[in-house]
Image (cartoon, rainbow, N blue to C red; front, side, top):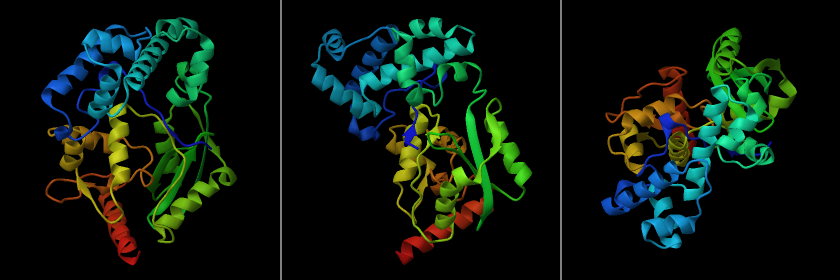
Length: 305
C-alpha cells in the first residue's frame, strides 16, 4: 500500500486565502495578491494557466508569486488549479455527464491523464466514482482492543476507515454508512491484520505512534487541519481555536471542529488531541470516555518515553 491523502476542491469547500499558514505570516496586501491569483485561476478553470502567465497578469515575478502563494495558501498555484479541476470533474460526473465529457470539460485534455491522476485525486477510477463508489474494493477486520471492539477498513491504497464500539454489527453498519455504494462487506483478517496489529500495539502502549498508509478523501482545508493534528506531540493537546489560529483563521474554531468530526481514520489522525478553549474534551465520534482514555494513555506514553 502506498501512503496517500487525496486533495479535492468543490465549490462549497474551495480553498480560501490565509488557510495555509499562521495569520501573522502574511500581510493584508500579500493576501489580497493571492486572492487575485485565485480569482484568475477560478476564472480560467479548465484551462492550463502557467505560473509565468499568472505573474504577468499580476505584475510580479513567477518565483515571488509561487513563494507567496504557498506561504498564504499552504499549496502551490498548480496544486490549487489541480484541486479545482478535480472538483469540476467530480461535479460533472455527479451531474450525470459522461467520463469523456467530464474529462474535457474539466480541462484534462485526454482520458489517459484522468486515469493517471485518479489514484491521487479520486482514490478510485473515474468510472467507479461516477457510480458513487459502487464496486470499490474495501476490506475490513475487527478485533478486541483496550478501548473496545476495533474495526479497520482499507482499500488497496491504504486505511480508509477506523471505528470503535462494543458491537460488531454496529461497527459494520458504521462502515457501510460511510461507504454506502462500495463493496464494503468483505471481511479479510489476513489483509487488514497488519493494520490492526499496529493500532492495537499503540493502544496497548507497545508503540508511541501509528504510521500507516491512508486512502482518505479530503478537501484542502480538512487536509490542513488533519496535518496540524498529526503535528501535535504525543501527550499534548491543542484547542480548536489554537489550531484555527495556526491555519490563519482566528474565527475558524467551528470549522476546525467539523474537520475533526469528519475524520474517518481516528487514532491514526489524532482528532482526540483537539479540545475546547476551556480545556473541556468537547466531542468525539466514539464517545468522551474513549477520548479521555486516549489522552491519559498518551500522557503516560510520553512520560515513560
